[in-house]
Every structure is written in structure tokens, then in C-alpha cells.
Figure 1 (cartoon, rainbow, N blue to C red):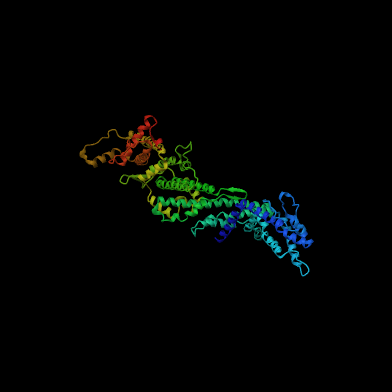
Figure 2 (cartoon, rainbow, N blue to C red):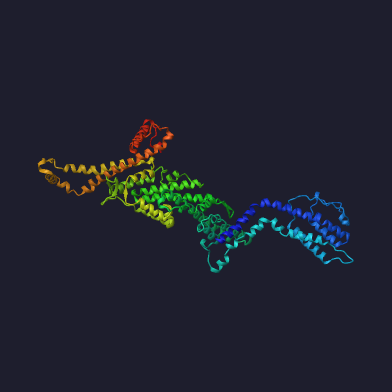
Length: 629
């Protein structure tokens, strides 16, 4: 932490100074021009007068040379009247032209050397009883003060170069000496000092403050220093190429790490809003200030290119959000229709996460478009998308042959005996591969944020393998109202297929085998007698081996299909009522579709649905299913 702060202070201060250089540089140049001209035009005039008056020719010559080196006379010419050369008074203070052109470094060096010689000679040749000083003591103090005040003139005039040199931290990266000692080709990026500091600044959560996240970019400036030194000082292009390759990896991992931190925070916030009982109070808000800093990272200049860090982090977050949606769909495809509640919960999680990110200024694609892209609803070949296709396949291959409907609870449960027509090995293999690629830590992040919340929510949503009214509502939510018609059409096709291919062939085969003299006997034989009579007459039919697998299994599937459509119709009625209520202010139908207090939700939904159907059939301009969506 201390190293990050030191590097951040050095690079932060250097950046501020260089940013303000265009403001300070003209002032500094003007100041030193004024200071030099004040010395050579006005301050040394009394010194020349004193030396000339006392006939100190050598001292006079040195003072005149000092004036000649740096004098910038008004009008560009030396004044004609210079009474100080004759040792006379009367010289007026000369007007100094303000210019932003200070003396060069060579002029400063010559002036300091000459002033040092003048002061040294004056102190050596002190006057006595019969002679006077070549230079007064006060004049010597003026010259010494000028030398002290201009001692850092070269550095101030080359402020940018000095700041770059002072803030050069390339030694923290350049380690060819250590590579030579260890006989290694290259250190891994995990051993790179700039990356260690940057990743620590993002990951560190001990203090819970935003100051470490604010300094996450400063250690990456070490790469700029190392690259500049490799090219300008060391003249080694291969070192620069090594730095460039490492920077590409480092920037990519930095963006992924920052996006993961941001996405984890908003994923946990979404879980706290949707499942408050499963999330510890305040757990999702601990790092809010740190995350907002990562969303507002400034643009960074690295190796001559500009990286918009905030935009790049937003793009990585969008990829993570899309991957979460894809993982939810793949889990649904690999687990079956009974897991639709989990898919709906993950769909709501993604929607809330998207909304929270957009509210905090992250630029993301439209959620509906992203979801449509994930479920391939925009594919012109697969009508309805992969979800509708999977639901139809799941109904035909797993749900109808294996489930049993219980009227008391109005739910489907897995029967004791099932006859699935295929397995889900391919979908499970793809899901397993994607989870392995994501890693165990990212697995829970893509679900409900954390391991604890995921286990709690999954346990509540998936208590048993069943399908009930709540599952039907969630199924309509994830499919969308515009795709329910396709699902119902597919159910109709399945019904026709089961009748024509599953029941009708057996019925046509059985009818000729039924004895024609079979009839209902008198009631006096009782139930047992009638049953024995029919068993005797239909003994060939009873012993028909394909009866249970053929006719009875087909009838089971037909019944399951009818019950499934009924659950779907009830859920659809509620969806119509809810949608129509939200559309009333838009279509001006407050009075037409106003629900009386005595109506039930089912009756209100049925009436709204009928009106929508009539409107759609009247001429295409009504509020039909497509227009409602």
C-alpha cells in the first residue's frame, strides 16, 4: 500500500506540474530575462563607475564583458551616453524591454563564471591605506545574491525535462541484469512490479476507501518510463518490444480485473434488491465509492496511444453481462423445463444489474437487444429463437413422456416411470465446458453474485423437480408475449402428432380385433360379472404387449399437453391483465377496460384478452398480441 501511494504521489505531482507548464513557462522566462537585464543594465552601472573612477582597468573590463554577454538594450543598440565609463555620475536607470526570451544555458554558465572571478578578485585585492577596493562590499553581495537566485534557472527553464527525469521510475521495471543472473527468458506478468502494484490497488479492500482505486493507474506509468529509457538511453529496441508485449497483456488483464470488480458490486446490489432475505444487510454497499472510481478512470497515455479506461471498462462489463445471460440460457437448456424459475430469476438479475449500471453512467447496449441476441431471437432462420425451440423440444422429448399432473396441487411432478425420448448430454457438455472456462470464482458471480446467495436462492427456487403455475408465469416472462403464439402453435402440432401417430394407428389396429358380438350384459350379473365377461371377450387385447407403451403412453402425453396449455393459458391471462393495466394511460382505455371491484383477476384478464382479440381481428389496427408487446 505504501509503495502504491509513493508511486502515485510521484506520478501525480509530475503530471500536475507538466499540465501547468504552459502556464508557468512564460512567467519563468519573463522573470529570468528581467532579472538578468536588471543586473547587466542597472545593477553593475555603479560598479563600473567605481572601477573606472579608481582606474581599476582589469575590473572595469570584466564588468563590461559581463554586460556585453547578456545585455538586451532597448532598440537593439547600446546607449551612446555612458558616463559611468569615465567614472562620472549622472547615468539614469535604463528602461528594460519585457521579453519572454531568457539567456541560454551557455550565457548563464559564462555569467556565473565571470561573476565568480570578479568577486574572487575583489576579495583578494582589498585596498589599504594607500589604495581603494576594486569592488565595494555591498556590490559583491549583490553579485553573490544574483548567482544564488539564478542557480536553478536551467532547471526551471527546462521544467518538463527535469520533471521527467525526477519522476523516471524505469528502474522499477528494467531487470535485464536479474534475467541474466537467473538465465530466464522472461518473468511472468505476475512477477512484474507495475502489475503487482496496479492489481493490488484494485483488489485491496481492507480499508474500504476509494483512495487506492484512484491510484491504480499510476504504477502503469512505469511502463512509459521504461520504454522511453529503452529507446532514448539504452538504444535497445528488443527491450522496447518486450515492454510493448507486456503492456498489451497488462492492460487487458487490468480492464478485466476492474470490470470484474465493478460487475461483482452491481450484481450483488441487484441480488440485494431482488432477494433481500438472502443477502446480508449492507454487504453489497461496502465498496460503492471504490467501484464508482473505477467507472470514472481517466484516459491514459501509454506507449504513445490513448486508452479510454472508463469506456474500456464499460465494454468489459457489457461482455460479462452478456456472458451471464448466455450462462443462464445454457443452464436452462441443460437442466430442463422445471428450471425455468431459475432462468427467470437470472433474467431479472441481469435486467436489474443493467439498469443500475446505466443509472451510474455506464454506456451499455439496450438490454432487450442484448437478450434477443443471446437467445438468437434476431435470427431469421430460427423463428422465435433458441428458447422457443428448446421449450418445444423439451416438451416433446422429456416433459410430456415423463411428467405426471397432480390436480390437487396443479403441478407437474416427475412420474415414477418415464420414457424420455433423448438425453441432454450435449447441452450438459457445453455447459460444463463454459463453467470450466469461466472458473469457479466467476461461476457464482454470473449466477446470483456470491456463493452464499446463489445457494440460498437456488434452494428456494428449486426445492423439487416440478412445474406449476409460477413456472408458467416465469416461462411467459422469459419467452416474451410475442413468442407465446409460436409456443401454442407448436403445442397444437404436438397434439396433432400424438393423435395421428400415437393413438390413431393403434385404434385402427384394435377395432378389427374386437369381437362383433361384444355387448353390455344385464345388470343382474353385477360389476364383477360384467368385468369377467369383458376380460374374456377382450383377452387378446389385454395381452397386447404394445398397449401400455403405445396407446396409454400417448394418452398420458396428450393429457399432460392439455394440462400444460391450461397452465399456460391461466398465466397468459394474468400477463394480459397486467400489460393492459400498464397500457391504459397510453391507449385511453381507462373506462373501457376498467375492472369493477367485484371482478376477479381471472375474469378481468379474460375480458381484456377477448377485447384484444376482437380489436386485432377487426382490421389489424387493434391492440393485438404483437401490438401489446
